[in-house]
Image (cartoon, rainbow, N blue to C red; front, side):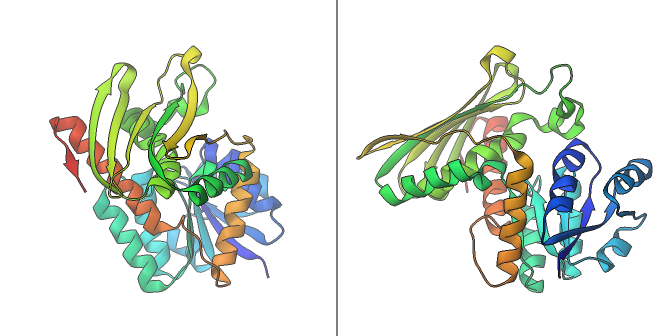
Length: 298
């Protein structure tokens, strides 16, 4: 039987990625859609041959799993509610906007014993995951530098109208993408220093518990000519870079569905809500450091 999904969200990410990927997946079924705008939920349900739901609990009652494409502060509450109802979780990044909210999702998922995947996009791309596996196997890395500079406030970019992205900026929007590739290689973070630069650019200096030190620079308001995604590790064996992904987000979302189904069947992975919570903790520490000018310890 296919895994029955309820989709929460009706924005551009839900309509362009989540919904079509679920519909096309041979082992998944899109049962219904819930959104904060009932008209948009009805439209998306009509496009996908599913049903629009007016009540969250009614949709939860009819599905095995949820896919969430909502602002992180909204997502956290729905994810906690879904886990308490025994539904598996396919969530977006960041998991939440506070450590407390992330902890509640983790506690609910652990208590219910549900499977969970957090969709850090690049972590599901074959080129990226192959490179990270090789880098991790090599070992001996003493640090890294990472730049993720996006430019979403240009005409025609659907994500530039997102209120939460305008409020929280690159730290919370693209920062999770950066950390999802740095943490598996260099390990947990012990302390963070953060400085804000032009165009709401956040510059992070991370000291890992392993002793390695990494730098991360993120923004969603870069000049169009300065858009950049670059990650390089350095250590006793030299230098290694992680390639950019292929850019087919529907395909990588399908891989995330595969991983969730595999976990339900007993497999394990490292991109569930516990990892999502660890990323939120680093982002929250960076926010504290940026605001008070001090090193923030985790």
